[in-house]
Image (cartoon, rainbow, N blue to C red; front, side):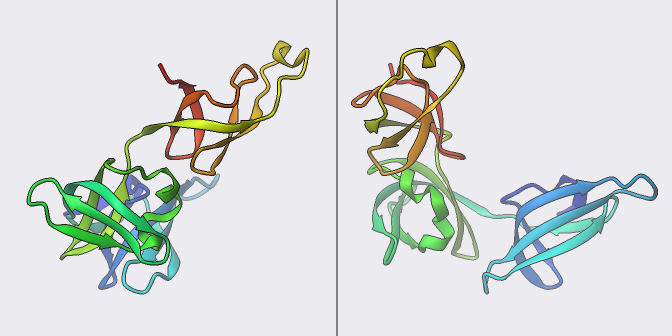
Length: 188
């Protein structure tokens, strides 16, 4: 399906110059004079190479339809890959660590995820927007620190560092956004 290059977003998959490419980043540049251009960073699915392309905003590109499978995370590690099971037919698939990326730290046993694939090859894994985790280490509150809207560093049970409000302490459960590892709220 043909779409305008200006509408591409991170995670979209396109067929460009005979190669299957995943959009990493899309910036729209509007110079003071002349037409706007879309500066798109894409990663080749097969080779993993990143390339940059410039498209005029009215230029059309071929967007690829992906198979989306609702799955459950079973187990995994960075070396062997991560194993997911399809909820529809209970078939297991192993996805390499580079496809899962940095969000692998938020994977939990039994977590519902969506695996996107093209011709049987997994291209991306989409986690839920937020997860609930426990804080294992947090700096103590400094007197007077609550007067301003400052945050303090804390370490979650999965080893990820996150900034939390001063009133949050070790042992508390919080909700964290998986996209950027940012604090959302206390878990209820």
